Image (cartoon, rainbow, N blue to C red):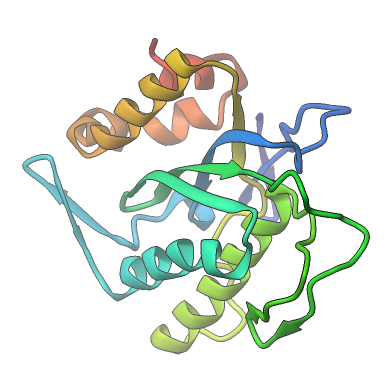
Length: 200
């Protein structure tokens, strides 16, 4: 993830692992930031997050993902003034055939015999799309991008790493005093993002 200026806004380059199938079963640590790292989803006081209508919408849309995509389980999650962290787990029942796609009515899939193999990128696309639409409606800001174009992901490869990331997410509000002055600089800088996001 590197930092570039484009049309006066930050552009985060893709950090997807080349050649990796992101619809593979497993756990993924996701970080999504607001456009320009603007602190528009609330504040943190004394280590506790205090949200607003935008954060409420974001939380609901995130939680709704497991209803829209039945291969998705949501684990630890936190919302902060200018970013969210969450763990997404992809699973597939052993008797599922991936040849038949699930039909959709509105935003929620209807029941059929099988499920589609949705990758992480589709879940993030849906979250951003649904939440941005509702946030723009609430704020009367039609057409404005709420989230940065890209997002950060990490494939969780062990139980130990899983528990450490869970802990990091849970205690994220307590780190805000440090993050407030350093998050943008470190997360958008390729050399320091790993040390900041994964201090273990």
